[in-house]
Image 1 (cartoon, rainbow, N blue to C red):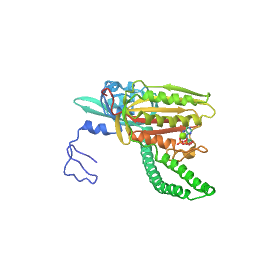
Image 2 (image 1 turned 60 degrees about the vertical axis):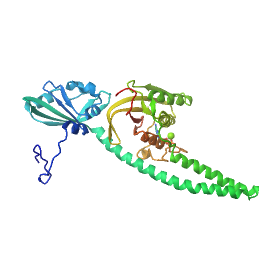
Image 3 (image 1 turned 180 degrees about the vertical axis):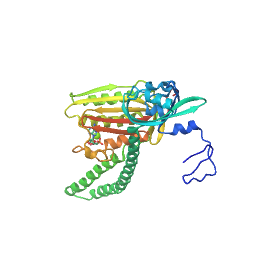
Image 4 (image 1 turned 120 degrees about the horizontal axis):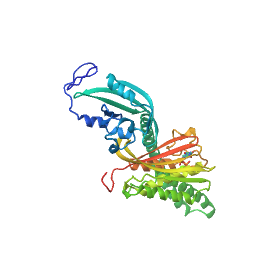
Amino acid sequence: MMVREGEAVTESGQQTAQTMAFEPQQLSDLLNTAVLVLNQELQLCFFNAACSQVLAISEKRLSGQRFPELFQYCELGKEPLLRALQQQTSFAISDVQTILHDGHPTLLDLYLTPFEHQDHWYLLLEIRQIERQRKISQENVQQHQHHAARELVRNLAHEIKNPLGGLRGAAQLLESSLSDEQKEYTQLIIAQADRLRKLVDRLLGPYRPPQQQYANLHQVIERVYQLAQLDNPAAIHFQRDYDPSIPVFRFDPELIEQALLNIVRNAQQALEQGGQILLQSRILYQHTLHGQRHKLVAAIKVIDDGPGIPTDIRDTLFYPMVSGKVGGSGLGLTIAQTLLHQHGGWIDCDSWPGHTEFTLYLPISDTEEPL
Ligand SMILES: Nc1ncnc2c1ncn2[C@@H]1O[C@H](COP(=O)(O)OP(=O)(O)O)[C@@H](O)[C@H]1O
Ligand SMILES: [Mg+2]
């Protein structure tokens, strides 16, 4: 299919009546693929917004870089790029092993396309992160599932809560006309109704609207660390690694503290035999959450070296009442996920035996200083 400039052609070859004059930069910034242009010295002369996310490097650091410096390590040398330019042929290279500037080993797919512009040759590079693409679609499915499960539980909880009040009230009324011996039964009804009500309230969650205020995320993490320390078996060792470039921004520190504490408690409970818990914070550039791209996102990681999430609950981990523990409520992660949702954020989990990593993503939309 060939598309000539200025007119759009449908699959069937018919021309549509009109084309829209979109700005190329605007369109390229909407792509999830990193698109960049290198000159003959392999120096960067154009890049779209996805570049800083895919390559984990800030826009500021990107401009003017030469190709090898886009990565901490890239198994691909300069040669294939120079060859593409010399031979003026395009080609694709899959599964290129790289280490990004945030230290993550990552596999990339690269497409190289040389083109001529005002008598000079340039190389167009399209870069796609294989792992991240898979993760984004996985994240979408999980977000829908979480939403559906929450709706179900909320509706059910409300249905239980209403008649429960009546039941308790009726038992109280009845009690006044009963002998002491019979009162034992109404007491039982009242006690069980109260127990159910508490459960339902917990299912509905600690839902107050977030009270956004300028706050320091590291103070929140430190408070959680101190709370965890108060009740910490000696054999669990904490490590902290904070990114000082996270600015003061608007969020509800109490709610985020609660979410983080739920996750740290789980890690402590998983480390029955002792082990390490790492609390880490990082800033991410151009990160997509709930289908929306954010210029800055704070990521808090809680990493433990325990046995890992039991495989049978991995897919439904954030569902209410899913627990791998005897007597566990299975609400800690549901509540934490909901609290992050209230902030436009998201919790993600990667786990295998010996390594469990929860990441809390929190968009930074309003800071005290200009971004
Ligand atoms: N760091 C972790 N390591 C291993 N398993 C975990 C970890 N965090 C959570 N889990 C698993 O996820 C389940 C659900 O956690 P949660 O929602 O907090 O409920 P609860 O802690 O009441 O069981 C836990 O029961 C546990 O099996
Ligand atoms: Mg828990």
